[in-house]
Amino acid sequence: MYAPSDTLPDHSRIWIYQCSKELTGEEIQSIERSIVPFLESWTAHNQSLRAGYEIRYNRFLVLVIDEKTAGASGCSIDKSVHFIQSMENELNVSFFDRLNFAYKAGGKISTASRAEFEKLFSTGVLNAESIVFNNLVQTKKELNSNWEIPFRESWHKNLISA
Image: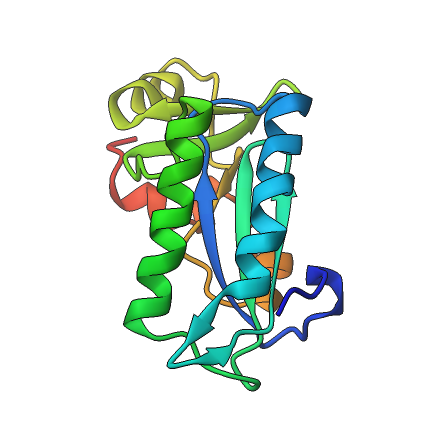
C-alpha cells in the first residue's frame, strides 16, 4: 500500500537509485504516474508492503518501506528492480550504474566515473570537504543524516588515490 514517504517512520528500509542524469520535469511526472500504482500493488509473500518514494535533487529515486508492517523479501525486491528497469527503458536513463559517483560542486549535483572523479580530485575541483552521496545508507534515518557527507568521511575515499 502506498504511503507518502514523509509519513513513514525513520526505521524504514530504503533503496537509492541514482540516475545517470538529472531528470526533467516530464520524466519525473512519468515516474510519478507509474510508481504510485506499483507501490499500491507491491507485496511480499502476499502481504501488502507499506511503501513510499522520494525523488531527490531530480536525480535520486528512493524507495522506502516500513518493514514493521511487512518485510521485503527477495521476490518483492526483484519486483522493485524490474519496475526500476522498466523506468530506465521508458526514460532511456540508467539507475543501476554503481560505478558513477555523485557529488555536489558549484551548487549542482553531478556524476562521474571513478577515473573522472579521481581527476576532479587531483586537479582540486573536489577536495576532502566536497559533498558526496552515500547511496549505501539503509534506513530513512540514515538517509536524512548520513547520505550527504564530506568526501573525507565517505567510503569513496577508499577507492580514490588522493
